[in-house]
Length: 140
Image 1 (cartoon, rainbow, N blue to C red):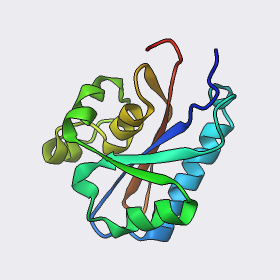
Image 2 (tube, rainbow, N blue to C red; image 1 turned 30 degrees about the horizontal axis):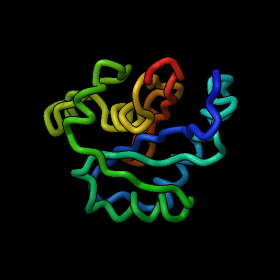
Image 3 (cartoon, one colour; image 1 turned 45 degrees about the vertical axis):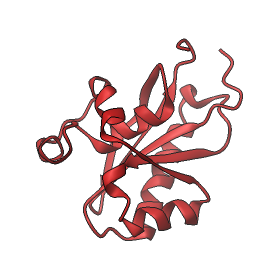
Image 4 (cartoon, helix red, strand yellow; image 1 turned 60 degrees about the vertical axis):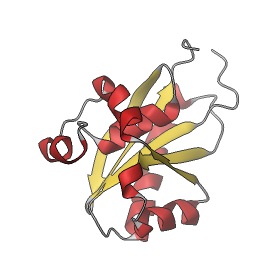
């Protein structure tokens, strides 16, 4: 399977007011876990971080992505809803607030693109959640 140029997609969610260093640490932990898996072989060394557009005001997320040199992309709710069947984690609170089972997992899946699947399910620390997805190379 040719994955040249494809990158890992990191999804991130958080409670209001999270600290940038804590978010950066969780992103690094999730990426390290992903890169240790055979599914990540052949992917470009970089990654991008994806989250819900409702998180635009979270300066901790902006700081974390900047600190790590990663692009931060805000996705509309319909993009997250479109991939919600691919999640493995469900938070009733997140469903009530955002209409999806997990911001981190749906953002990772939507960010990875067609044919995406989770390789690192939701991890949580300090009010922050993170997940990593890749496209399987069969779609599109």
